[in-house]
Structure formats: C-alpha cells, structure tokens
Amino acid sequence: MTRSIRKFLSSIALLAVGCICCVASAVAAGKSGDELRVIQERIASEFEIIGPENVTPSPIEGWYMIQKGSIVAYVSEDAKYLLQGDLIDLEAQVNLTEHARDVGRRDMMAALGDDRVISFTPEDVKHSVTVFTDVGCTYCRRLHSQIGEYLAKGIEVRYVLYPRNGPGSPDWQESEKVWCATDRNSALTAAKLDQSFETHSCDASVIQDNYLLGQEIGLSGTPAIVLEDGRLIGGYLPADALQQQIEHSEPQVQR
Image (cartoon, rainbow, N blue to C red):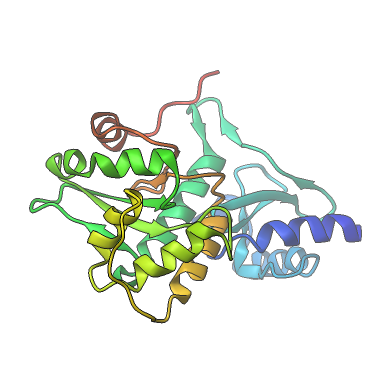
C-alpha cells in the first residue's frame, strides 16, 4: 500500500478515538476467532495508529470496516484497497455507515463527564442532548436565548464549549473565562449577551480537550447537537423541531 494512502487514513484516524468490536459479524463471515485476528493484524499493520481492535468484518464478504470513533472506512481483506463512503443496505433501507458513526458518537458522548460540560437541566429530564457551542456564534446565541423552551420540554442541554476559530481566538479566551467563572451557567449566558461577568484564573485545559473532541466527531461548525443515540445535527433547531428529531428514529434511506 502506498505511503500516501497510509498517511491519508492515518490522518483520518487522528480525528477520532474509540472502536466497535463485533464477534457476531466474524461468525457470520465464516471466520474463526484465530482467522479474524490474523486478518485484523494484517490490516492494522498497514496503517499507523489503527489497531487490530479497530478492524471488524463488514457486511460485504472480503471487506472489513475500520472505525475510529465516528470516522469509518472500508478496506479489502488483503489491505490492498481502501474505500471511503456510505455503505447502504438497499433491502433494509439503512445507511450502515451512518449507523456506525452514530454509535461512535454515542459512545464518545457517554464518556463525556459532567466535569467537562455546562448543563442546563430541567426538573423533569425526558431527554438529554450535547450541544457544541461557541460563545460568539450567532445561531449558538439564538439557541441559548431560547433555553427556557428546551427546558420546558424536558430537554437537558449539556453545553460543550467549542470556540470554532481555534486556540488564541477571542472566543477561545472568552470560553476560558466562562469556564473559570464561579457560576458557569450565568457566565455563559452573560458571554452570549456580550455582558461582563465575574471570573478568575483556573485550569482551563478542558477547552482544548473539548476542541479536540469536536474535531474527533467531525464538526464543521456550531452549534452542533448530538442526540442521545449519537445522531449529529449540524446547526440550530428550535425546541419543537429538536423534540421531533429526538423522538423519531433515523429516517429511512431512499432508493
């Protein structure tokens, strides 16, 4: 396999963490445990960062899925061909690749501790969403201005501070100030209104951690909403529309 292809997949792998292991798929593919391990090790040896545990059988005989978090690619059993794109089961009308991405995002959000988010929580929590937000983003501000409407519908909003313009930007610095505030919830609201708030010096490395997490799940902008099942919604949704998205399963793939 050429160096450029190895480097290409390695750069993709750098974007995410995590994996899905599927012994049942190996049995369905007719491979014994030992045979599967040999194939996993062969494929993993062709790529930096990819480990055998990141390689699982795909629904297509002779092809395997490589997954690092929400990043998915397919590689032939002999590690000669790499394929990126969505694998769709036309009979079941299911986007199998998107489902794998959802699972990766779901697991990453489940591992995201409360000590890395700013939560706005209703008394009766019916649903919980993770929202990657930038303090200066127009639609992030619009969403937050309606936070009471989300809470009224029983939707908990777990904010992840994600200054989309990166380290050193004004919004990055403002995010650090919000994180170091005594009352982070009030500080976040004030920051989105361009109002002053009380803050102090603290360890704000969580901003860097959350920025990397956003890159790992493939964010292209803010706000970005991750549902409990791992589905990613890019952009603002009012409370009614978000509730509908949460309560409806993934739409079927059209032929």
